[in-house]
Image 1 (tube, rainbow, N blue to C red):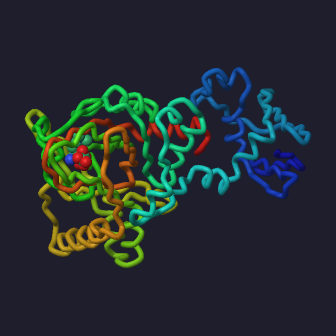
Image 2 (image 1 turned 90 degrees about the vertical axis):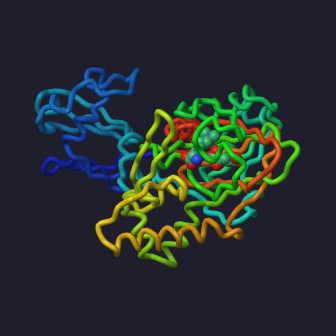
Image 3 (image 1 turned 90 degrees about the horizontal axis):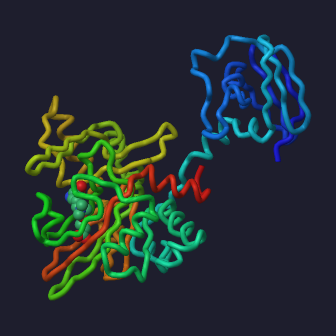
Length: 370
Ligand SMILES: C[N+](C)(C)CCCC[C@H](N)C(=O)O
Ligand SMILES: O=C(O)CCC(=O)C(=O)O
């Protein structure tokens, strides 16, 4: 519970000292911009009523406060009221850290005992079930949902509860096997080294959901998962120059098939301003043929990608398991790399993508993140 203790105003800055000892300084312009009265703010839509250019250049004429709220009278006689709880949100460190995700890195199959494995009914019909799935995705980048009817329709209900089916050139809900519906090796029985999908899209899919509907008259087709953040962190600690290179160099990726040519360039390892790893875009197959300005950059490209690959290809760091009908695997495509061993026989998978905005929206609505 935030409690106002003292307020002081100097040189267009109002400083609040809270009873817990913290102090926060607010620019006058920021305070006027955050007036929540009915003429400045549409409380029903959580939107400001004025353009930035309409905010007047005024000064604080008078302040009144008690332990719960502050009232400012402005030099244009406008009056603004601020609740202590609202003001207390804007300690910069607290505000910044409240927005940082806190992934728990993992390596190897032991993570199987940590990720959420939940009955589909509990996921779809209970808040705690939904929280368990989204927390597992936030913590480990993987969640497993069991007892799902072996159908595209039942899988779609799971995809919608995860945030909604994301439509791409591959469709919305997809069902795929070894028929060449698209010019991609996913539609074959070849082994696929662990990778992130959609490195050729301006924004990769947020989640990838896979449900093996059938695998008959054959073997293989085991799923491989690896924590892309763990491998990138090992690279940072053991090949720092390569890590730096991969956080700065734009690797170009592309996807080509009749009527389609996607192309996008971005670093393999994306950092935010806090230097937290926020995304891995790693796919050895979809890399474009690139030109380089000099030998050094070309050599750095191959050395750094090969060194990072050694972590991702290390079986010790991979989680290998077989998707079976009824079990739906959900993974964070911004973090977890997935692949499969080669297979024979008839193997049919269905699933969808979910955008990152949409699944984080669900997690935020469940109050798991800010
Ligand atoms: C749509 N579905 C998931 C079946 C396959 C899409 C192909 C994904 C492509 N190999 C990539 O890595 O982006
Ligand atoms: O067939 C599988 O298990 C995965 C295929 C794959 O990697 C993909 O569709 O992106």
